[in-house]
Length: 199
Image 1 (tube, one colour):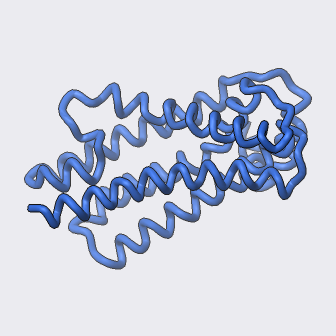
Image 2 (cartoon, helix red, strand yellow; image 1 turned 90 degrees about the horizontal axis):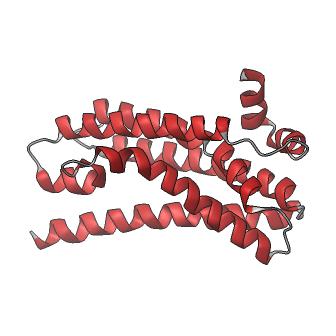
């Protein structure tokens, strides 16, 4: 298992070339996403305790901090997995890809592994990044971008093998998925900015 994960992280072309000859099995991708889900749950609890006296920041830092939101916290990474898979599948098909959604879904889950690592940095940021400072914000976004582009690199290799498209074309679906993620975060940032200035 560990050699497989090492190959996935650092030699995704080889990993997905091998996986293309195997039947679709969602067990390991589901474990990867589940770990990220649990880590996000812990992060939201840490942030909730840290920011308990500031409802506005509580709300805007992490929408999961709303009352009775434990199920939402645990389900959201799986929803994100599905959305990423949809973007990657549709974009790849528009580029004359031939892979199935089931295999795309599986391989997208594998590519979420760097985002699971990102959940660990979120927990550390919850411990050490509040109150926010300029260096802590810059450091946090450095890790966000690094792990996001790592995931994008893996998704690019995955789409190349899954849909039998060229390496250059395979970058387009992963860029679309990255833009989806960044758009969501930009929305949260703008919501924070405008609500703060309205108060």
